[in-house]
Length: 291
Image 1: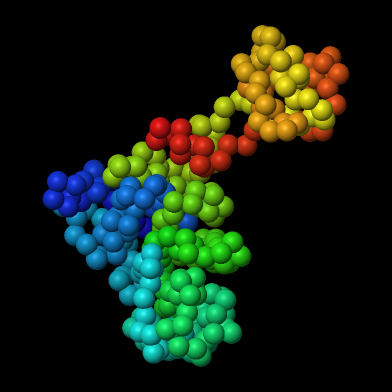
Image 2 (image 1 turned 90 degrees about the vertical axis):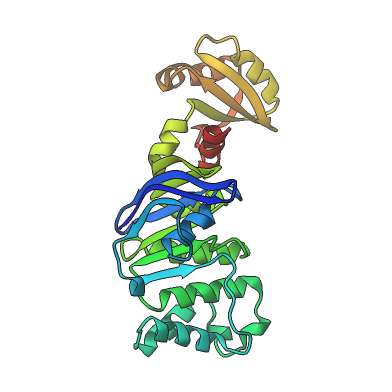
């Protein structure tokens, strides 16, 4: 649905994007991640047609009327009500179904404030309103710039649920520096760092690549003694205490751990609460890739 080839954007001597090539499949939820200043907003702005690239190409296989854009800080005329904002967006998108206005306002959690002037809205409420205005035209491509950054935990969860529900019905690209949000809803991820694309692919594959063979062991009592007892084992690469009663055991292989870890803990007379493979997060994978 979205193809970017050799895209670069320069602001004077500053290189915001440097030869970026990526592909977003039809119906995917594509998470564009990176720290502030990585080039995420610049890339989304070029895709939206709001900025011109210095070189390269960016194409969207959908008409402009079916492409919706949500900036990171949406603004609206203060005297309009939330309902009027969404009705205006619907009109501009050629949406004539009045029920769609009600549906997206409810979906964004703003039914209680539909007839209030937006001049009194909080940043989080404006973010929800922006999402409603973006979705009312039934777009097939949705570009979201930090859609959950201004929301409290409950609001973030609602927005992420909205994004997840769009999978298959629309192609979604959303940028975020909150990596746990991207991991929660994305099937594909692109990692931008200093204007360059460092990784593109499925989230599960990235986590598999970044995974280190390790187990998290919770015990009752002194975890330091247990860690010291495991260290000399030839199949242990390191045993460190992570928290009170919790240690991380890096091992040479899963098969070695499956065969030897439990007997070794028993030999140390450790009172074991749990033993589980370490789960790699997108944040860990990102830090490993960009460090």
